[in-house]
Structure formats: structure tokens, C-alpha cells
Image (cartoon, rainbow, N blue to C red; front, side, top):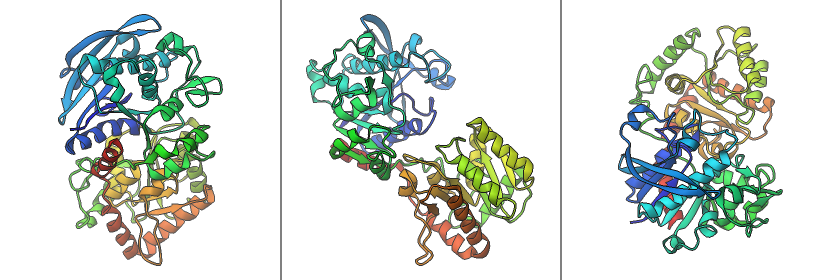
Length: 475
């Protein structure tokens, strides 16, 4: 049986800030279901751990690791979920805080975590065949296994896989971190190791030292090898292209199921899609919009320029005066974009609902009640919301990039194929044209719209498919 240790800085259902947290739960569960011995290691953020899980934790081991020559306590707590053992690295100095990231000493915090999880393997006598690390917080593990821990015989057979969930975040630190945290020399502090512009770049080190590098969609794997998307690592990624591959994320198809979702007014399936109209009226009532038979464009997003929200604001400014639609926006983010949606709400009463907050139940209502789901991201490594929307028969409107391109088939008027709408040129005008096209088909070609709904709901984004590809990469 293949043994896998899956390492990440966050993981649902304990704590998550984005897609990494979802993947760190769903992928190990799918790998376990496929017969692998997979275990997950995370930091123990004591202030963020939900009480019901904190009560289930058992103390498994304790030891120390040296951080810059100083012995630091490591506690290992454990519990199992769905048959998957979780190991949580406990140290109040590093992880007993109100947040997960964004602290001045993140280099020390996650440097400690990486050394602790490596040394934990011997303490627990669990030596995996594959150590699967994720994003910059754990990307230095392949370097440490070669450099600091290369003398440990049981570790010499471990293969490593690095998954990049978002190349923007790389883990940049001054060279002094090699001494003050890791206690290693500078033999790999060069362009083919982990040096970048005079700094230590953890993600670059992981790319160069890992046996396999994966990203969360095939298109993103190609995009990040170009200067436009490569975040200054495109040259490194092109040199390592032989071990780079893209695997599209999945979603929890049991959780995101309109036939069983308790958050929607009326459950439905592809065969009973007419009941979706009840959820549309419920959504309108919930957000204070008139219950009218006009197309509803739903948005559940971080309100940032990376998500294309500035372009969406510009497009709606031109469309709302003359186009008979409704818009429901749920999210938080940049202050000027929040204000922009609130301005649209005030200016176009009865057409726009601006809900500047996070509300998971309401997000489900939007998936279930909207007619279209808008994701105009500048770049999107994978994206999950477009897949969730399709599960609910809510047609996505996306910019053709990354996982959006890989998961949404644009409507083809000639063949009738498609699961949504997409556009290539990243401008407000092209986005506006695409919104008009979608609204027109909804209003004037209801049979076409209904067929696209059926085709979208027929897509299978279950994690079992991604798990097979990860298993192939492990092999």
C-alpha cells in the first residue's frame, strides 16, 4: 500500500482561508477511498480550532527541534476523520495566534513547521513513500530532505511532490533565515537552487528539488511557464517542465448537491429542474429584490482585481441602465470595489443586491437561485465556484484562464454544445458583451438555456477523478 504524508498550512474542516483548505481535506479523503495509506499534517492553530474538534484531539507525541540553534517544543496531536489520520503540530509560540498568516515571523513559524513535520516522521515511525507538500508554507521540505536531513537513511527513499495552488505567494525571506531558522549552509543559494534576486525563495526551492510539481489545472500549468503568469518564476518552471503537470481540482459533490442541500428552499435535480424557480423567488425575497422573471446574475467572490471585480463593476455601469436583469453580489475585499457595488445598489434599486459580507448559507442560495454565475478572474489557478454553480444548473460566465478554461465549455451556437459562456479578451467591454449574450439567450431562447443547464448539471467534478491522476503522479 502506498504511504503518503500530505502537508499543508491549512485544512478543512478545521480552518481554511481558500482553495488550499478545501483541497487539504477533500484530496486525502479521495486518496484514502482509493486504497492509499494517507495521513495529513497541519499546524495546530489553537485559537482557530473549532471546539468540537479540539475536544477530540489526543496527545500523540512530543519532542524538540532546533530553530536557529534553540530547542523548540513540538507537540503532536491527532484525530481521525473519514478514516484519515490527522497530525497537528502544536507550539503556542508559533501557532497560538488569532490568525493563520501575515505575521512578521512567518519565516520562523513555517520553517519550524517544516522541520517539525520532517522529524515527526521518525518519532511516529511513519516513513511515507511520498511526501506531498503544498504552496510556499511547506515548499522548502524537499530542500531540507536533501540538505539538512539527507544523512538520515530512512528518509533517502522518500519522493516529494509539490502542488502550487497560487504562484503569486512564494515565501521570500532574507538569506539569514538559512542560519537563524534552518541551521543550514548556502551550498544551494544560487539560481538553480533557491536563490532569487538575492533572497531565499521557498517555492523556487520546492520547484527545483521536488520530484514532481503539480498545479491545480492543466491550463494554469501552461500559463505559469509564461512571463504574463509566471510571477518571475516562469524561467525556472520552463526548465523544470518535464516534471510539471496540471490536475484540475474537484469539488465535494455530496456537499454541493441541489437534490439534498438544506440551504435551498426547494431541492431539485436535473429531472426536476423546474423547481429551481422556487429557489429563484426565495433568493429574490431573501436579498430584497422584486420577484420578477428576469435573469439573475450571481456573484460569490473576493472583491479584488485579481477576481476581475473592477471590470465587472465597469461592465455593469454600462449595462444596468438599459438591460432588464438583476444582480446579487456576496463578498468582501478591496474597499473601493465594495463601495462600487454599494453604489450600484443605491443607484439601481430593485436591480442590484450588494451584500458585503461572508455568508456560506447565502452563497448556497445564490448557487441554487441564480440563473448565471459570473467569474471574470484575471487569472484563476483552478476555481471551484464555477463547478459548484454548474452542479446547481446555474450557468457560469467566465474569463478563459486557468481552471475556468478547463472546466467550462463555452456555448457553441452551431452544435449546441456548452456548459456556460466564456470570453478571451480581458476587457470590461467584452465582459459586458458576454453578459448581454447570456441574458438574450435566457430571454429569447429558453430551450437553448434549458439544454445548457442539463449539460452543465451532467458534468462530473467529483474528486475521485483528480485522485486517480495524483496517484499516477505518485507512481
